[in-house]
Length: 265
Image (cartoon, rainbow, N blue to C red; front, side, top):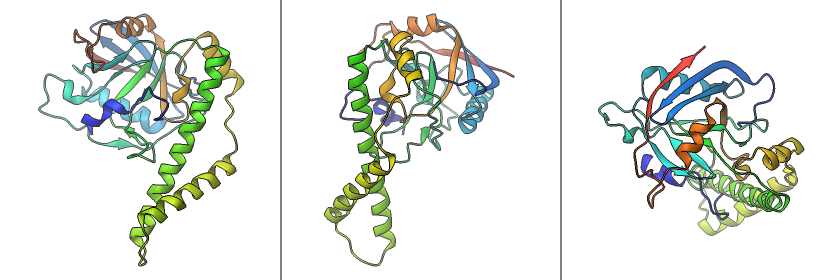
């Protein structure tokens, strides 16, 4: 899994602060000490599986020494890949968590969200067990948001198609009859369009629009990845990490690491 996680946050339209509403905070916070400074985050009660998994990893010391292995200015900083630890003698990061995507938790500046594999191989949008990213993002104007809404709609169509394709292939394997791949793909298109009609057109909430036009974020990821927390303090550290020089793979030229993560309950 680790080798594929570079593509979980695509920038092209061809691929596909955590807007926690009042009461969504769990009261659990985490202090992430990095080589660039400290970042304090809160974890949401609306995503209990992700919240509890993050607590487990932090308290076990899993995050101690992991690098920020993917950094893209005006987008996000990503970490949590166990293979970047200097001591990889004990690793257990090849697992996923069921998606807990919640419309009230969106990708505003400061959002903490789970990375994952792409829809084509992960139609259920299950999250990486360990990798997460913090949104730096940018401020959007009306035209950019209109284009982003079109991008979200396109991504949703692709998601519904990939999900239908996966379901139909599974049904074909369980059936005694022989169904060609061409027929499966044609039926997947029909099923995806039916799901689109049932769901209706996408409409970005006015609250989200206002945030993206003032505070900023990465709206094109909304509805596709599980946001499970938000930055409370230390966005200047996020900005500093995002501004660091990177190589052709978006990895910082000078290694930036998490020293440790302390859970505060």
